[in-house]
Amino acid sequence: MSLLSIFKHKKVLSWIACQIKPRKVKFDWQETPVDWIPNEPFSSYFLSTKSI
Image 1 (cartoon, rainbow, N blue to C red):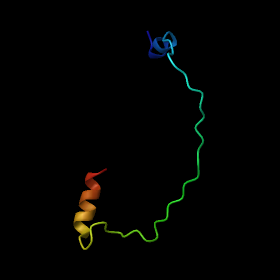
Image 2 (image 1 turned 135 degrees about the vertical axis):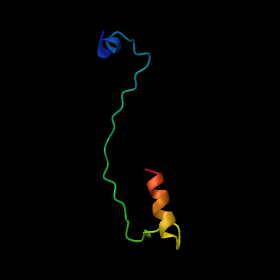
Image 3 (image 1 turned 180 degrees about the vertical axis):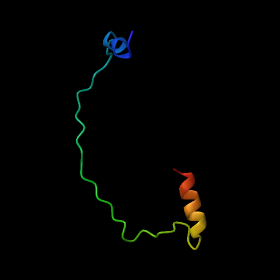
């Protein structure tokens, strides 16, 4: 039994007809500081690597 055959036999209890529309998003990085912890470049980069 494949995974798709399991979903073919499931009943949908509710269905909302909606459409997801993509939008063009623009970000302005001109005034963003390179180091987000002021005067602490090592701490900024170290914590940035931990959030990945």
